[in-house]
Image (cartoon, rainbow, N blue to C red):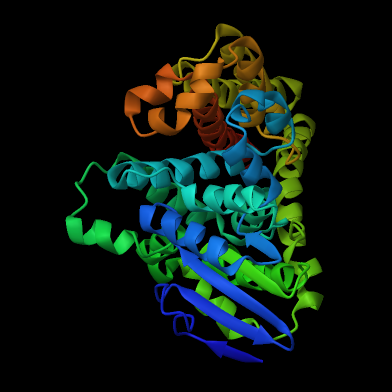
Length: 400
């Protein structure tokens, strides 16, 4: 196999276009910036002139539908997402999408416009399309699972800070962004502090994209991918990594240590209450249990109040917190978010404006979709505080 980091022999393309030959097959990789109008024009030009047998696009089915079907957000089943414990994944996806949209607005182009151009150009020329990216839900879940508890907080803080950052982007920075994949830019900003995140978001997807592109039909293939993937893809293209696909498309199981700790805490609480009852009487045990209920329920319901949640949500938070704190199966935040989604469901326009509203403090309370996230985060925080306070009181009663 031969690879080339230089423009195609026609000299009509920029250095963002690379050719790789493998036997009698030719692969033309077009590196794009997801917020660059220049990339949109380049993609159209390459496909029209090369007339490939297949056009591969850095999209999975979900992202493709989101780009081509504007009503997809409106059809989002929020209750199902809460029940499947996917709120955290959806929130990160929304924050990253808002980050891209904000930068794209400064450049006058919709994020992903070049991918949509690739799909439309191929359709107009009756060329088959191959969606070659890993399912975005798997990518985000693997990224979330690979990140430690403290670094999850750092990641969310960094993403939220980037959303609320109103610093004007310089002309030099805008020019640089036109040539880079926004995801790569975000990884650069996070630096070396989250190597596991880079491995999941960039390195694993380099492998996945390569294998899907190589398995696509045709002898001449144009592949449109983010510029940040090009170096890694070229480096590993000649390697057969099909055997790694199963590994990088699975969700890592919860570690045994986490499971043990998850059940150990409620076991200690319940065990302590039983011991207190046996040693000091049912009255003292009852007082400890009552303190546990109040210590968990009050801060959790306060979190719901701060999110301006529905009254039923506030009541549900108080009831759920003492119970969910005794099981790692489900958290109070998910219970509260589910009740909020039922009692105060977002309307269509709020799904449509979420990416803009997320960039303003007022928007988090005004937009009912974002308020579900607020309920989830603040009640979860309140429940965590209550668990520590209640647990401390019970253990103190046990010892003294």
